[in-house]
Image 1: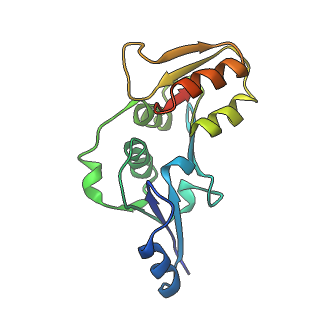
Image 2 (image 1 turned 90 degrees about the vertical axis):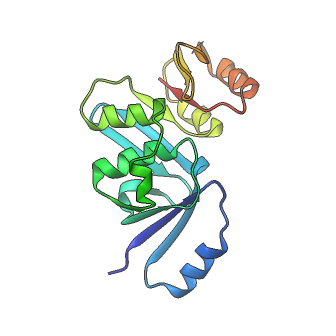
Image 3 (image 1 turned 45 degrees about the horizontal axis):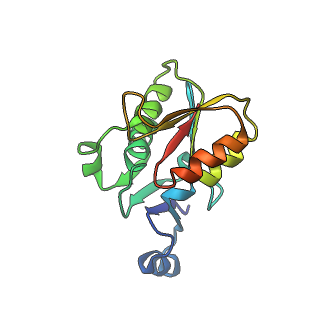
Length: 171
């Protein structure tokens, strides 16, 4: 039976990925971090690959070709779900950020606020189904820095536009 192998990188295209697709008996998938969404609830954490239409738990193996701020959250998830990944050094040498903390807490049945993380475009799509006001939190900050109380979809769009280089979780 063919295994589903995901190459996870900052970019979409890879010569290695294309060569493996041609010469492997496995199903080879490739995605970038910007195509991942994180739906975080108590005891119900889901990481979805929007590019391939699969959840992270649907893959048999994940290869981290490059690292990004989402890497630690993915590693926490894969360890908890007992899904194989390459670059095992990541299990011992990664930095927790808010996203990784929410994943760890949610998977271990701690009360966390319902949260969603993705690209700014994905945040806008998800927010259309949310009841305002919402909280927008920077995942790489602490002590309330880059936290916003958002009262409308229009306000969310403005804040995201003004903070293009920041990564946020919506609660």
